[in-house]
Length: 310
Image (tube, rainbow, N blue to C red; front, side, top):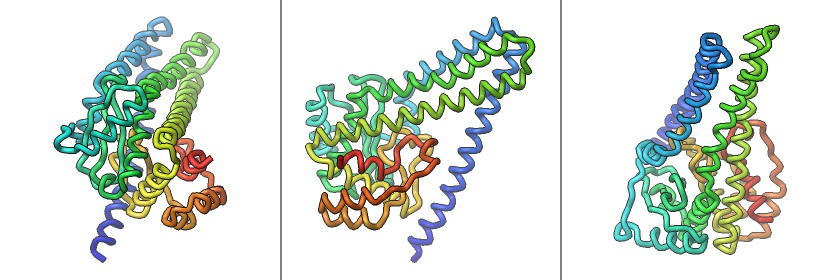
């Protein structure tokens, strides 16, 4: 009873934190837009290249310092083969199959079942696994999750998403430069158009992130020669996060293999039975859709399962 009450309170706290984070992100976006708008009026269109160059430089610094920041935020600790021999062995085999250098192996002391890959290049990459994931999943399911993360490294997804994150900045300043030259246009209208263009660019980046998840899932299916280990892992991860109302650090959501998602009981029962035909039928009957997915870095779990089992 106490544990259930504790999870409920913790879930309510995390929900409030998530709302505050979204509000702060929106506020930060508006603040930056206002600041850049003031710069536009002060330096004029000709001097607008200064904040553009600054934006690109900031993204470059983010790419370079990314691994250091991720380690600090997540609490990931690199482990030797003596500390996690089985984990090292699985990652080494999957990396050899993918034709990439073996990533460094990290453990995150966190009960949330998740894993993620990060790094600057294929030769300077990491695979981090939460202790909660190792405790919850069996060996085949862990291998499926690791194959998914190796797929991200093989496909250079970190670099791709970092480069894509330039798009909202380019659209914002492109709109300012394109329409700000006309003296007949209202400065407020130009600014609002730029903010809208930036918002559309961010949606495009999120869409690309969801597509990269599908690609990593497909690679995991090929590497493990079966869709079921990763499918079972995704259901367990998503259902556990949803049922316990717990989430990992919101700043790390884009990195993780899964997000909280309510799984229909039919799919849970099919996963438990181990019957792939029954699982396919349960997934096909799950036709839920939601506009909130547009603002997510990951597709709905049911969509990922359908893609995996095709």
